[in-house]
Structures are given as structure tokens and as C-alpha cells.
Amino acid sequence: MYAEQTELTFKFLTALEPRLRELADDCRRYWLSHEADDRETERVWYLRFKPAMSRLVGFGCDTPELMTSQAYDTAYQALFNILTTGREVGDKKVRRILQTLPKVGSPPVSDTHIRPLEPRLQDD
Image (cartoon, rainbow, N blue to C red; front, side, top):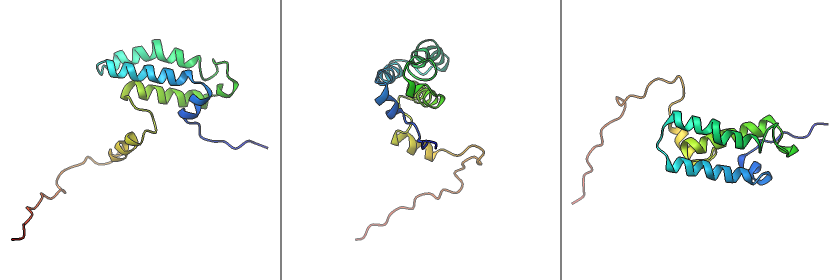
């Protein structure tokens, strides 16, 4: 009999491995203190944050529950998102912003369908 598969969240991973929360805080501090330079951010990710994460989750860690590709992928996505946006995946504000963006392959948004606001008449 197979155990039920549940979706791993970063919050769940941090409950199992508190050092992931510390790493997330370090990623956020980096994001707050540096200019948005994609090349530099990627360099810092691959040289500093990803190796630290790899020791805490995935096949390179010591915790059996975290030795899965799903745990690794969840932590990777969450930490890289914090490093590049300052926000965690699943943050309600991020979800609302993403919902407003046009979907890939959708036609470009034009303003031809937007009517100008009509002045409001005040009652005398």
C-alpha cells in the first residue's frame, strides 16, 4: 500500500530543517542590500546559496525525510524566488500579482478597449 502523496511546502521543509529558514532570511537580506543585477545574483546563488541549500535538502543532506528531489525542488524554487524578488513562493501578494499578468502566448494588451472616465455630475 502506498502512502498518500502530499504537496511539500517550504514552510513544511523549514519545520523539518530550521536552517532553511535561516538561509531564506540570508537570501532576503541579500535581496534588500543589493542592486538588481541578474548576473551577480545568479553568481551568488550558484557560489553561496545553492551549495548551502544542497547540504540541507536533497540527496546531499543527512535528514532522510528531506532526501528527495521534491524537497530539493521546493527549497530551490522558494530560496531562488526570495533571492530574486524578496518574497516567498506562495506569498498571497505575489499570487495576486501573478494572476494579473498576461498568460504566455496571449495577445498583447492594448488600451483600445478602455473607455475614458466620464466626469461625474454632482447633484445641486
